[in-house]
Image 1 (spheres, rainbow, N blue to C red):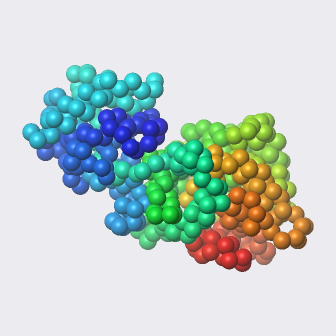
Image 2: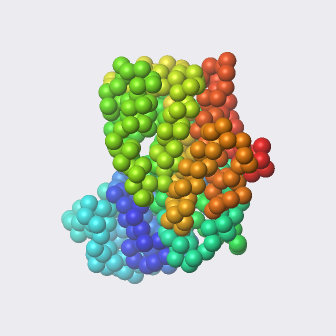
Image 3: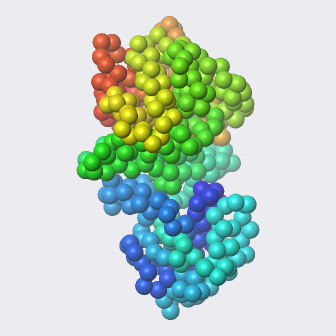
Length: 449
């Protein structure tokens, strides 16, 4: 979602799928609220977001609220408060909301956004004969203070020392990791947000500390555990919508390492190659090399890919993982039979990969954005990782530099965790890593364990 920060009036922001309106909120068509309740026109706590019918974000937002419970949902999510059919001229709001509708409509008509984005399409539909009440859904979503991207730029502008910033970030991590892990450890449903980039994570000040939260649920996969074939269906949705039909660009830092390898194998037609050939071709791919050399690349996976590959190719369990990815890539070429063709081990591998979107990707994104505050971060990511995987036994670097050591160590440790064991199967190793309490892992790293 492209927005000017959730702090304005009129049109607040837009993405490909949704247009955000605030102060006043866009009202519901009279009597057309289908979930929750209609919100007040000049609320400081809520924004209105209008999307096309069929957009599934409201379903994901409701699931996220169920998973976390009301109290934590209000704290950690830009969560849904209600949804309805939006008012238009043919389907007006209730009498008390007419002034809000007039003001919101005026703001939309005046707004000049980016070509191809949601607000422009919404304006066209609103002014057409069909209107928007029968073609769109209006959601009321909790307002968040500022995106991660905006926050890091604000910190830079204010000249706040990096070590003070990192002290607050490190203190916030156990709670945030605990929240993220709940999305794939629920007893009745799992929800994976596959698009936690720098504009989909928000930051809220908590006194002298900060708190991270999730700002957008537009691209997710949802699993209902009590449904027949819930796992194969869930995994098939992930592969069909996010690997087969979706282009994973080099700069998409929110994509886990194993998902990048699967995408590379599939898109480059390397199904018949040996694991080491595939991994080395990914390592030497011109897109990765060019991206790693740009001044704005701060993606820990790309920055350290040579170190990771050299280490992981010595691990039998990693070779097993790539072999599984090869078999999955072959089956991805036949989408109609995908659900039935995946083996139990392949399903285990793919389910594990989806958990990486919550356990690792948000931390990769946060670490990436810290480069906006302090350019030393890029060097430190490489230095900390190089020392970790070398034979250098001098004291570690945790007390030096900007303070990113714990984040880098967390990501390094979790990235290699499935592949370091001996004598176990890949499925057993993945299940073991998946069950790790992320908050405890962070606490262990900070305490030096």
